[in-house]
Every structure is written in structure tokens, then in C-alpha cells.
Length: 280
Image 1 (cartoon, rainbow, N blue to C red):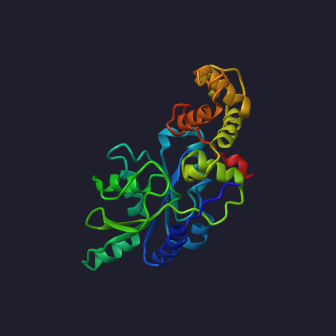
Image 2 (tube, rainbow, N blue to C red; image 1 turned 90 degrees about the vertical axis):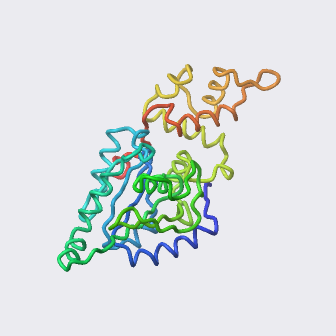
Image 3 (cartoon, helix red, strand yellow; image 1 turned 60 degrees about the vertical axis):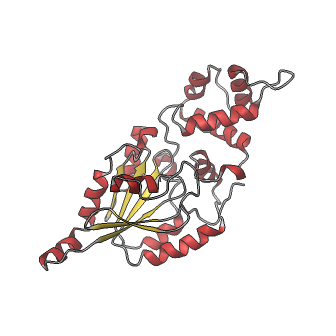
């Protein structure tokens, strides 16, 4: 069973709930490779009628058709969905546009009174979806701490983007009990769960099976092996790459680390694990 909910997350959830009462809009950062898996049910219960922008970040690593379907799925009522690649500079203009649209009534109300007001936006998401990177891109400079691993941001940080927009960065937060293990595994694949608590070999075996279900050529073309999954897949990758232990046995643990790292860095191609069809 995969589960990870350190103490700072419980504290963060309480702070997020408090701050949701004072913000005008939510920027909900999802990973385009597993957008639905990134949805925290606890957040959904707190949002109420607050306008939400779902930013499917790392869209350059996701499969375009599935990403588009998820954007359509999330775009209902006072909610918008858009794609991002926050590591590319000056790529967050659509976020600003969406915030202006969703907060138009407030902005106009104060403008008519001749008063300049600030729109307050809270940024939510599970660990390692790129929340801080999105904020730094919005600001045009590094104003928050970032890192390509789970748990970098530990406390809330208010950041002024421009004269009318302030954003609140929050720690990446999971839900206390990951009962759906398929979702838990997908969060682990994308790096939202701390690697140190995971069984890397078992995780890689599961990933190989998911990749084969999408396209059996993903693994075979990358590692020059016949179609395979699970333990056999790790063994074949190890032999193909020359990962051998003393005595000539395949180093399957090293192969497991390789396939997970290749997935996270986009070397296996553009992949989105979650599918809208899975909800029906």
C-alpha cells in the first residue's frame, strides 16, 4: 500500500481552508501526465463556489489528445482549464487572462469607484506539480523555492505578481488516506510521493504494465526489447542496457530506477496515464 501524509500536510490543509475564505480565485495546478489523479478530494470539498482555474502543467510531457479531453472535462460553470509548460519563460499569460475573466465583476466594481483593488489567488496542488515554478513564471523572477521532488514548499508564501494580483503559494498536499491504489501509483510515477517510502522495483513493474496498456511499443522502442511487462520487463531492460550483477544476473533494481526516471523526464514520449474514459 502506498500512503504518504507527513505532519506538515495536515497543518497545511488547515491553513488552506482558512485562506480559501479570503481569496477571489483558485489556481489549481495539475500534472498533465495524471491530471485526475492530482485532484485532492479534500480541496474539492473546500472550494465551494470559488472560481477555479485548472492549470494542466508539464503539458509538454503529456499526450495532447488526452490533455485536451481533460481540459474540456474540467471547464464547467465558473471553472476554466488550460495547459501550461511553466518551465518555459513567459508562458503563463493565459493564466492572467483567465484570472481577469473570472474576477471581472470584482475588478470592475472597484474600478467604477475609482479604487484599485488586488485580486487574491491561492495556488493549490499535490506535491511536485510545479506550483512554485508557475508562480515564478507569473512574476518573471524566482520569488519562491522550487525543486523537482515532493515536499519542497513547506509553508505558505504570499507573492505580488503585479499591481492588481497577489498569489499565495502553498505546500503540495495529498489526502490523508490514498485508498485508490491506482491513483496512488500514478502520483508516485510523477514524483508526487516521496521516493524514499516507495518500493521502486514494484512501482516500475506496475508502470510497465500501464505503459503497455497505452501502447506496447513505448517500452520496446526505447529499450530495444520484445514486448514485456512486470518483472520480466525489468530483467530484459537490464540485459539490454548491460546492467549486470556479479555473476551475470540482471540488475533489475537499476532497470527499475531507469524506467521511472525515463518516464519522468519524458524520454518515453508524451504520455498521459489518466483517461476520461476511465470515469465512465
